[in-house]
Length: 435
Image (cartoon, rainbow, N blue to C red):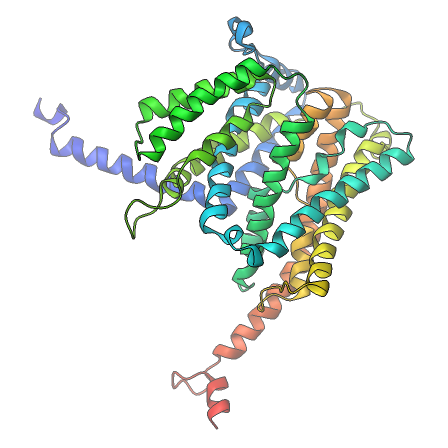
């Protein structure tokens, strides 16, 4: 009987082993390649299922309403809507924490260092929107409401591609992409709140300030009482959702309240700790499940020629592939040319061109904006999904081609600098310099 008690050595060993396995899984989910891979896997499963003989089951699963009694609070949502409004709020909470850290202690703290990636992000949002508008206006103006679909860059997917192709690329390239994507997310949040709020109800929105304020007070006092913080976050989410503003904005606002500076020197700040804790949930659950329900467009009995001549599809693909590249790369070149802003000395213009192509991967937020613009499940929304998938894959392929070539160049430089022909422990390049 003693072996079955919680305090027995066997029980303690099992508990320690289970905690070690949980920590290992969480660490794996924090890696960019795994997060991007799960995102892609969710989209691929959705596409295969939605085009299989069992596609009606997939559609019924997304349309199922798990809580039909939630109508008074506007919570009688389908399972697909719960993932877009509920689970994705976790993703935006992590984004909010990351934004706060960048503004307080990261690259966005120094205007001179932040100037280039910030301007690149702005150019990378303006040009895709203009590309989309130009294509749709030339075709008669149908689908103008989707102008913001190609403006977003997917952080998880873009960083995952960069991590896969990069072994010798400059470290500054990742920092540039991360800053660009963070600013991109910030403006995407503003676009969602301002342009895609159908009907605003002020009272629930004002009511949401109370739980957000209490949440802020607790985290400011370094009180990480999960029994209090999680209900407060859920209440804030419910009230923001009831107000008509997209509920993911609640996640960002809660993330912004968390302090970045550590209470004691040498310790991680609370924002970093919370980001470390919630990123596996975001990367391993929230984003892949959202991709699973958002990317499942059925192409059965669809006129593909008609789809790929549709102005919405052409506008989104042109915005992601052409608009993002020209916007990010062109704005960076112009700012460096006509101001004192400088690119990191380790980064070449060829590297930045590959990065600009990589910024055309717009998945999570692009799909979300498509749903908000045209309505989930509408014909236009289905075409947006096809366009986002095609544009993101083309951008990822072109970026990988350029960055793999650049990675080979840096690998050859590294090999040359570290070559030790005579095996004396001193690289040849240093012997040549001293000789």
